[in-house]
Amino acid sequence: MTPLKLRDHIAIYLSIITLLLSLAFIYLSTTRFTRQALSGLEEYGESMAIDSAIMTSHFFLAKDYEAMQQLIMEFVKHPKIQMISISDTRGNIILSSDAALIGTNIADIDPEWHPDSARAATHILQNDKEKLIALAPISRENVPLGFSRVTISMADTKRAINNGKRQGLIVGLSAWILTVLLGTYAAGLLSNPIRLLAAQTKRIQEGDFSPTGITGQQVQELGDFSHALNLMAEAIGKREASLQTMVTHLDNLPSPVFSVDPRFLVTYINPIAAKMA
Image 1 (tube, rainbow, N blue to C red):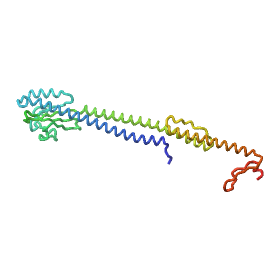
Image 2: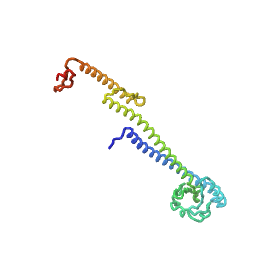
Image 3: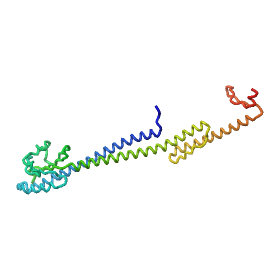
Image 4: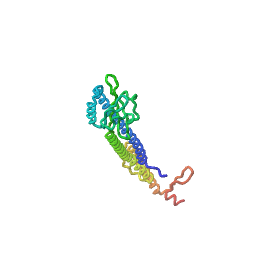
């Protein structure tokens, strides 16, 4: 298996880490935006149900159904409101902006609803129908009179949530791509000088002691290492030149000269000694 280059290691690890961070950002941002959007819709629906309950309570005791019906038709003009219904304490709808619901019971329309659970403003989410049902009790001087049921459209909220998810995805992926590009550039700042230093050590091995030319303008540590390597190469070059000069002088001596190692193996012999041998 061929080992990866340093630049490839940095690029791969950085890509994985930033991708995970981007996915986490996308998830958290879209989740938070969705929660805030739904919370705002729920508050709006409950406030409309409470307002309609308060206003219709003035006409409820007098049984002024005509005035209540006119009030309902005015309320239904508010943004996102699809329908408003007024029921008695048992949930029987007596007035509605949708005449087809008059005479039915809220429990038949919303099985989750029960009069005992509607002592305060509440809501029911119907995601499959893209609707939010808000209910509030109608009372007058602490006397229960009935319930106000408001149907809110979730279409605009769903579109806003989808747009928020798309924007979060675009921002997250853009940040990931930008980070990968910057990481690749940073990896190049490290890998290119290291590659040049490796080439320089190979040239020193082959007898080339010329300096590398790495200045360390981007990476100080690599520049310091390059400077030390150049000093070492210069010292080795001077030593090799001195040895070569000495060998030249020995080769030109009229007397025989030779050297041996501790095992008495000949390590050098000049031409005159070679002729005598």
